[in-house]
Image 1 (cartoon, rainbow over the protein chains, first blue to last red):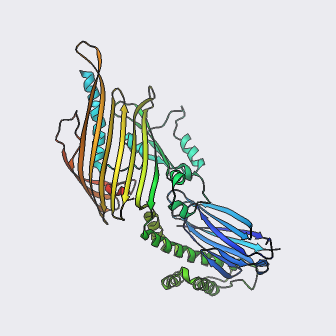
Image 2: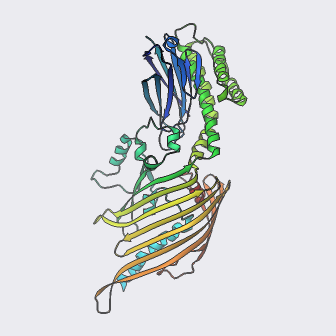
Image 3: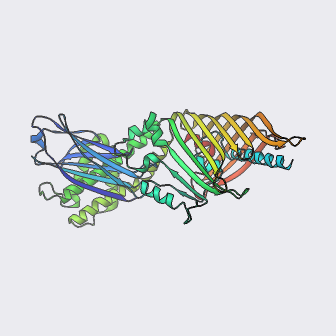
Amino acid sequence: MPITYVEIEDCYKPKTTSEEISVEVIIGNAGVGGYLIFLDRKLKAANKIAKLGKAKAVLGKRTVISATVPDVLDETNWTSLTVVVREGNSKTTYGPYSKEVANHLDTVSFTIQLVNQS
Amino acid sequence: MRRRYFYALTFMLFSVTHATFAQNGNELSVPSTPAFSILNYEPAAIMRPSNPKELSADILNSFDPSGKLLLNLGIEVAPYWLKSRPYLTREQYLDASGQQIFLQSLMLSAATVKDSLTDNNKLGAGFRFKIVDGKVSPEYREAEAQLISRATMMAAVSSARVFIQTNDDALRLKDTQEVVTFIDEILRDSASQFTPDDLAFFREMVSKVGGNFDNTVTDLIAYTEMINAAIDEESAELKRQVVALAKRRIGFIAEVAGASSFFTTAHDKFEKAGIWINASNVVSQTDAWNFSARYFFADSDSATSNFDFGLAYIKELSNLSLSVEAMGRSYRAEIPDFNINNEPITIVEKDFTYRLAAQASYRIAEDISVNLSFGKNFDSPFIERGGFFSILGVRYSIFKSNVAGMPAARALK
């Protein structure tokens, strides 16, 4: 059961200085998976929404989202991941990043890096 | 009179077809592939396209150079799943209702076959969808939680890749020891996701991979990939369990299917059509009540119709499946004939009959089961025989591992 690695790098520009930044991960295609959200090497959340703090806390650092999605649905071999960064009323969506595995029960590892810059 | 015998023979064959189904297992379920069922035939080659490109290729490959449909072909397609559904979460899928459950369960099927009796080519087309799909069991939730835990562990391993490749010296993981310590700390920091057994399992996977790696980026990346491969390999059975348990829903389940067949040579003529409605109440992983109704209509030279309805109780143990069923059938046949003055008339045969049956199926191996059926079958106006039957048989599946499984258990799947 091969594992496919999908690696994405992007950037995020905080919109305010006063609002808390949170990161939500959506595993699509009715998939089951596990994910971790880091700010640099500091683990911020496992399988739930991460609160990263305000702009000052994230600038110059990387938000790293690492997710593993095994294909456990007979109906499709598609797996997908969407990352949503919220800051007050502002919402920035990354993805959806989709990958169709060659065989049922294969696994996809998604790693998304967001460089937080002003 | 010869003509009447021909119609009687046609009706008899129609009835025998259903009697044969009856003896093959539990009658009270929606066929998994209605197009194959209406033709009473499983094609040698079945195409299952999973994207629009494959679908168009399969359709094109179904015709010969002169534009005629190839025979002995089958196709099954789930239109909703022909493209990626990136915003459909697991919970939305598992707790679907209304339009969503129709869309995600709709399955279309078609097949072609040569009719050995008339030498005509036939095309069958069908559909199947669910209206209600019960809910997942506590056993499923347990397996899903374990799989999420394993996937999270693999996500921790994958995250190390980022810090192996980074140019930031303060963040970089420089050797296998630092990689393992980093992952170990993540697992401990997210303690709510992992049990002590999970942590021991991770250590075991690290030992399995060994430490014969250089401290180059390439080697360290390969190291993380090997740890993930080891975890993934050990999780294979868990994945299969999640797939299987997700299908074994409990509670109320309702499903509808329909199919029709046509002669494609000569006159493109309608042959027969059927509709199935099935409602199950799966009380537990091993017990289910099943109500089913179905209507068949055939219009070759004579018009025949059957309306069946019935109730079954099914019990599935580890290798043994038991079921009892009671069915009623109302049938009607309109047969054209000539009276003694050689004037055309229509003879109408109609009656009500019933079937009572008990079945047991014992699985010897993955693809082999021994089946015993006995009871009273439907009466037929054209076949003179005792209504009671008892059949002992072995089912062996060459191509599909689930075919030889226990037929009565289908309602529990």
